[in-house]
Length: 52
Image 1 (cartoon, one colour):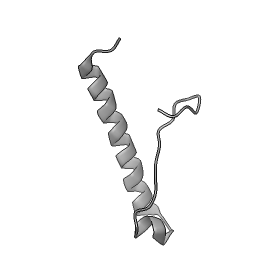
Image 2: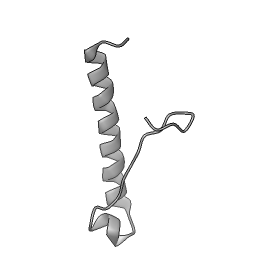
Image 3: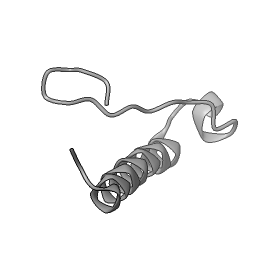
């Protein structure tokens, strides 16, 4: 069992990674739907392609 502090650190790291992916997608997108409307989604997967 993981303590609450470690859990919160991992949660924040996952949120930061997803935010970085979203920001990068917005900056590098060619589609107006993504870069103007900000209509996209991102996800984190583990090594076995399971959604985290």
